Length: 172
Image 1 (tube, rainbow, N blue to C red):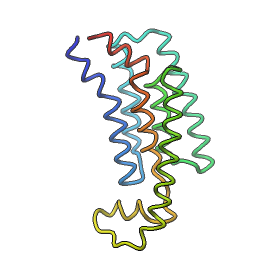
Image 2 (image 1 turned 90 degrees about the horizontal axis):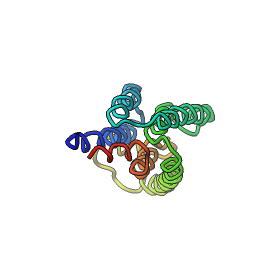
Image 3 (image 1 turned 90 degrees about the vertical axis):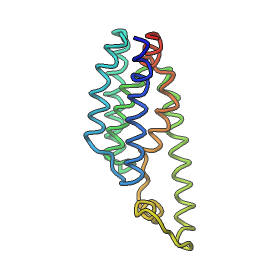
Image 4 (image 1 turned 45 degrees about the vertical axis):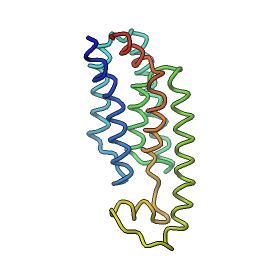
């Protein structure tokens, strides 16, 4: 079983990193990626023998984060992919030990990214931007902020404290 530990430990971080990269470069997080994150949770949790209470917390946080994400989307604060990624993170983080750091670090990363982009967008028109088209779009004044990046930062910082990661570590 110990050979599975690195693989199981990498599933969620890999998915949120891919989501962050997609959001930064295309301003979208595909539905299939969020669905894969949700679908991958069950086999990982079953392999790790996540306790029933862990499943309950994960499901409750998934639903709570989905409602919160939909509300933020309806208010125009985040995109639809961000809302779905937010809910998937609630599923994987599933417990108070990980949720508060997730929310705090997501807020810090989102605020820092928004301020950094505001500054960069203010000064970017004075520079010749050469490179990938996504970089020009990212630095375009008035363009949205890819909050999937901030959500991924929060998730990556909080995941080691999650009940699921604790269950994974017990396998080794």
